[in-house]
Length: 432
Image (tube, rainbow, N blue to C red; front, side):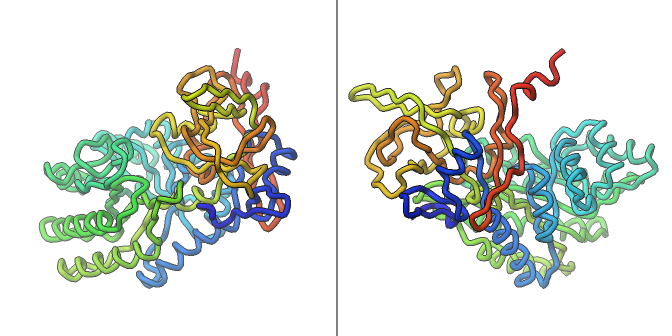
């Protein structure tokens, strides 16, 4: 019935998540409110870990892409479930550090790491730097030398694969701000350059072809291209690359028409391709990394709102205003992303009313979803937007000086706050 398995309907007709009544959660913690189901998160983490055991003999590790949702509790869960961590900024490194995450299990991404971030990461003991360009390679080598450290590096490669997704989230093609291109010879020249530097150790190649992908074939093609490149490096430079990071981008279900691929199917097909190419090029099967983020937390999360004003414009649309909006979910404004909206107060009723869910910001584009079907709505109802665990809190803002919501974790009927709601005092904390 729902896109999320952790959701249900109780005897009151209310939507539940992880055994908790969402209407009661809204009363207890206030709205807007992000809610995550811990069991769903941990189950997905374990499925990835098990897939490595099954298809790679344990010769690999999933890295949680913390840009999807970075907070201390998610770092702790990732560590407890034997995942590494993909970080993309000094702030994400600091969060992991404060959570006690083992830094040797982190990969540091980014197309424009600052000198300060690089130095901080080196001193923090970050495991692998995913180098994006020659300027960064030179800068990293220089800073590592000054600190008398040797940085383990990976090169982000553009394999030129069309991921069949939104233009803004396709990152594997040649026209991308990320990485080194294969077609132009840029990637091979970068490898040769890295071998000349004393303070870096090239141990890995990385690619990422996009996000919210439902087709396995692009992943297989990218893996084959990357293995061919590993073969070329061995044949022409006599260097064996021991690690291969195939990125993330696995699609999830936002609406019932979405058809995500079971993650185990992806791992199986890609492992066949990797092993075949390793044999073809007479190289060892590399240690494999992947970077799931959205698929770990996306479907595990929902956002709760309280309905305020309802404005019916005859023969045009009905606006249902909520107490959140683009400050806690910018994805509709950016990508026109589809979401499932449920009247959590009347989840047992048929969705017969067509509404546009509008946010409270002073911005005409502040919409959460347009022309969506919900059970008839009245002022004071609790609305739930499903599959908001990824890229909602992490992209939230204080536009209009609106405080960011709290995040509550639920598990088998119990709830706890893992990120506190911001106060007005938090808003002005850095003002002078």
